[in-house]
Amino acid sequence: MKGAGDVLLDVKDVRLRLGNAQVLGGISFQVIDRVREGTTTGQVVALLGPSGVGKTRLFRVIAGLDEPDAGTVRDKDNRPLRAGDVGVVFQDYPLLKHRTVVQNLEIAGTVAGMSPETSKKRASELLETFKLGDRSDFYPAQLSGGQRQRVAIAQQIVQPRQLLLMDEPFSGLDPAALEDVAKLIVDVVNLDDLYTIVLVTHDIRAAMTVSDTMHMLGRDRKDGKIVPGAKVQESFDMVKLGLAWQRDIQEMPEFTKLEKELKARFRTL
Image (cartoon, rainbow, N blue to C red; front, side, top):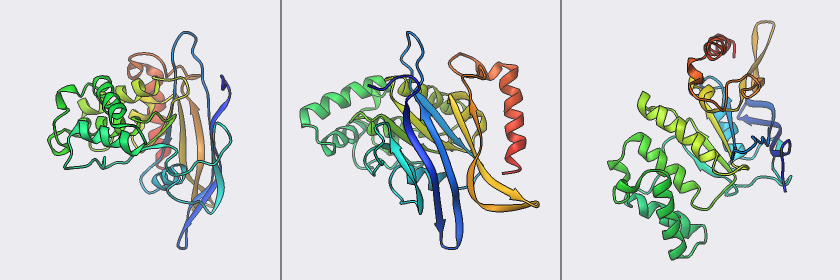
């Protein structure tokens, strides 16, 4: 049984080249279990960096979709993560276009090995949890971007998984939908103490709002020149900074100060 301080995800010295380009230059970080007395608390970890820095490539490596040239990605039992071990929500929410919302969820359950009865029951539960009951018979094209994302997340946890990866979850959303998705991410991860959401994003403010840990990705510089290959340049424990697990953190002076610092730092990555 895992407890506070245990490693839930271990990414160690991941390196990746594409052609002649070094994309990932030795990325290492861990997701450590947190415990909040009297509260179910999962983990939200943001991999934050500017466009083109290699976030999505790292995302694919952690998901087991791409093999790194070097390095390892291991789960809480110290086993290598493979494709299918984790839930994956891509930026374009690839739902089955000719199936309704409830059918998308039921099919996900069947593919995961559930009986038709079990998958139907699980789909019904998730429609309630994700406030999609009135959209159950809608097709993806009839949904808003925020609603499609809700379905995509629900689809990935029909078969409960402790690790969910999300690629640019805030991209293309209007302010109201972005706020809803941020709340949804926190709600989902707190369904279980060992749930972990790792999201990659360039949206500084959104990442700060939902995360309890942030890792800033960027490239080293030597003699004023960029050294190819992204690394973790800096990590932020938002809990220790007092910028997690409370309401209205965006209104706090400390939040505004850190946001300005990160925006300035982005120009050097």
